[in-house]
Image (cartoon, rainbow, N blue to C red; front, side, top):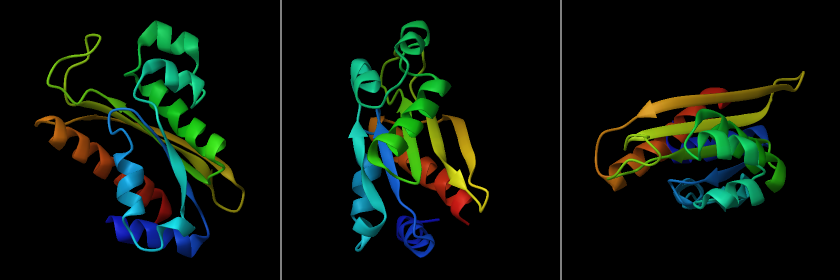
Length: 159
């Protein structure tokens, strides 16, 4: 699902999205906002590049960050939940990873975790999913691939 289709699907469903982004530093939210009419579906985003901001702004558990570091699957899940709850959105996307060129805390460049949190269906069951991805390329390529992966994940739950 491309960005225009994603925004259109959110609008059609009367739903909203928010982001908490580390390695993409706001690129997901900015890309969504490029779509005309996106203000009907995009609530906002948290740029949580620094580890302490993951806890302070998005509510990621400090003990989790201390034990596993900022690049970890559960961190992506908690970023997504934090984006959704703190921005008052139906869906939250959380992204953390290493764009490179160097490793971070033993995590190889190109490693990305994308989290999704939201409610789905008439029963309002909670959706919580994290994808572990590995991309090859320079910083820009890894960051762009992470943005697309986030859109793909949300799009699967909207279609």
